[in-house]
Image (cartoon, rainbow, N blue to C red; front, side, top):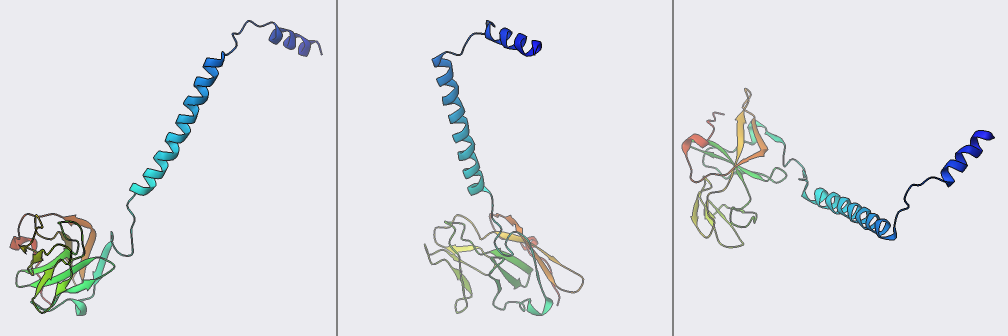
Amino acid sequence: MGRLAALLHRAKNSHQPRATRRTFLRNVVLGSVGVVALEVAGAFGFLMWPLKTGKFGSTVTIPQDQVPAPDADPYIDREGKFYLINNKEGLLALYWKCPHLGCTVPWNASASEFHCPCHGSVYDRHGVRTAGPAPRPMDLMEVEVDGSGNVKVNTGKITERAAFDPSQAVPYKA
C-alpha cells in the first residue's frame, strides 16, 4: 500500500497546469469540426464513386450470330449502353449518350440515323453529327473481334473524337 499512497501523493501535489476553459472549448470545437469533416468527406466520396450498372463498365461479348449485317440496323445493347454498327469500314461501338447534354440517343430506323430527342442533334451511321447543337460526334467504345467471330466491346473504355476516321472501325468478316 505504500506505493499506492506515494503515487496518489505525487499526483495530488504535481504542478501540471490545468486546462483552461478556453483550451477545453477550442479542443471540443476542433474535434467536432474534424468529425463533421470526416462525415462529409465520406458522404461525398460515396456519391462521387462510379457505380457499375449491369454490364456497363465491363467487357461485353456479342455472339457472332447477333452481329448486324453490313449496313443493317445496329445491334442495341441496353445494359452496355451502346450500339454496334457494321459499316463498309468495319465495326463501331457507339456510346448511346449524346455529347451535348447526355441524353440517350435512339436509332431512327426509317431515316437510318440517330436522333437525339432532347435538343435535336442528328448523327449518321458513323455517329458523326449532321445537325443540332452537339459539339462533336458520338463517343466510341473499344471493339475487338476474337478468333470465333464474336465481338468484345469494352464499355469501360470510352473515347471522344472530333470526326470519323475509317481507322476507328474494326474490320469484320463473318
